[in-house]
Image (tube, rainbow, N blue to C red):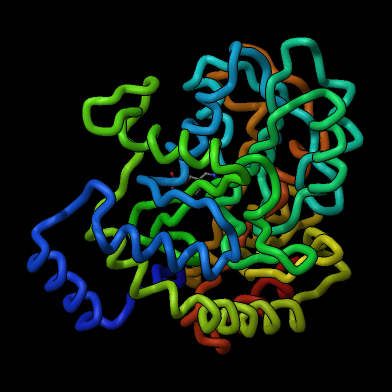
Amino acid sequence: MINVTKTYLPDFDEYVSYLKQIWDNSQLTNNGPLAQQLEKGLKEYLGVEYLSFCGNGTIVLQMALKLLEPAGEIITTPFSYVATTNVILWENLKPVFVDIDPATYCINPNLIEASITENTRAILATHVYGNACDVEAIEKIAQKYNLVVIYDGAHAFGANYLGKSLLSYGDFATCSFHATKLFHTVEGGAIVTNTPERHEKMHLMRAFGHRGDDYFFMGVNGKNSEVHAAMGLCNLPMVPQLIQARKAVCDVYTELLDWSRLSAPQWADGLERNYSYYPLVFESEEKLLQVRDVLAQHEIVPRRYFYPSLNQLPFLKEAEACPVSEDISLRVVCLPLHAELPHEDARRIATLINQHL
Ligand SMILES: *Cc1c(COP(=O)(O)O)cnc(C)c1O
């Protein structure tokens, strides 16, 4: 079976050598030496000053939202993974959905101002598929209305925009290191901030909000372990190679697919892609389902990612209509993509798709 993704696993003996270090130290968690070493490596790789390695890509969003006072509305995108909306609801904030740009599939900055009220606290937008949100336009709006900007950068690891990591934009940018992501620590995540004050808050918040006997504010368990950090230390040096290998697979798809009947997001100008996903948009949902069935017969499993549009989640009481996101969500799949996918498989997948358009 060819699945939408396959987790990269490092050399087994290398991982075991880190485990040996953990056994020797007998410190398994609580900001141990490997977690600190990974944080240092991540900061160097991303070129950012303030980063906290945390439990997953969801808790870091909750930690950023937790700082917002008083509670209120969060402008957000309907075109993302469900976690982006869940965290807003989980923190008892109100999501206000703003439709996406029909070219980039990231939140449409031209529609944001009309949705701002006196209760708006923040903008939570996703760098979807590692594409760059219009960070300049969003920053301008945020300054004008005094809003916090949080980027869900779960897809953005390894992508650069205008020569800097995409995760260096915004007041907070979060990342997921889940096993399905480009770079992973099995489960894991990180939050990048841009001031020492915010960093200190995140650092404390992930460890219950206290240092020894000094209690500062209500924190949570957002930490991660030495065992997870070890996986990250094995995988981090591989990232440039993984991105190159993924690019080569993407190039096969791009060259072979029949673009007269298919489309894809437009990557932002100034973006150096990370090739984390290969989104493909069909002419209709009907076509998508037909092609999906054909691929299934060949044991090829793409993923409807993202579907549904988050403003249509069944557990929302009410939500704004987002016609662009609703339309794209019905027609988009992500094709199988990972560093070790044989090019022959990518060619076969592209050919099968073209034959059934
Ligand atoms: C994966 C993902 C998350 C959640 O990350 P976890 O590490 O699984 O908690 C959040 N947002 C987006 C856009 C994601 O793709």
